[in-house]
Image (cartoon, rainbow, N blue to C red; front, side):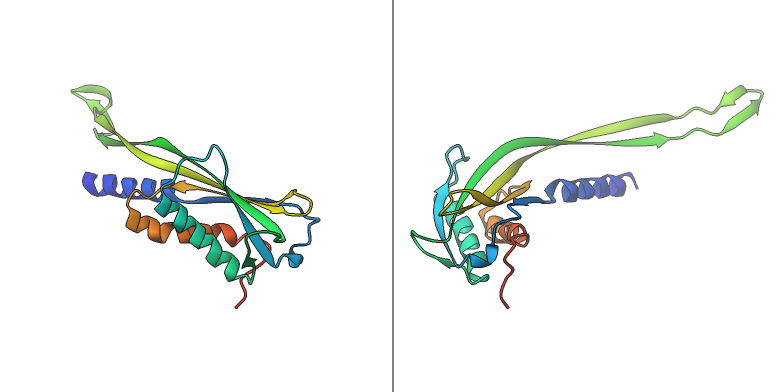
Length: 184
């Protein structure tokens, strides 16, 4: 029973820790319907270094999301310019599980009065993981002002095969909040 409860606690903690948080902000006065083209500024200075494969995964995911919104990529003179800032940090998750083995209830008799004895043991578990934060900025090219920002925070998958699936999924969740919806 103890093993099942511990396993359940670990699974629930893992689900909670790996849940992705998305926040967005935008200029409410900006006319997003005029966006037909986008250009790439790149990864901003200070971003955690990504390998070329992860950069490609991310670029392909954003290219796909914009294409599904009928917003065309062009090298320059686009309606909006986009940039990405990424930070990855090592974090530690701590969980605690307490087992109480228990005595009896209140007793009265030869052995004296009072609550029955019992004992408890607490197990602590620490897990290291990589926490990633992606900041996606969209600027109006003419005014050079920020018109939309999306921030996604979640656990970075360590295996490249898993990132092949998780990066497009994360970018999709982020872009779901973009004011221009996918064209069906």
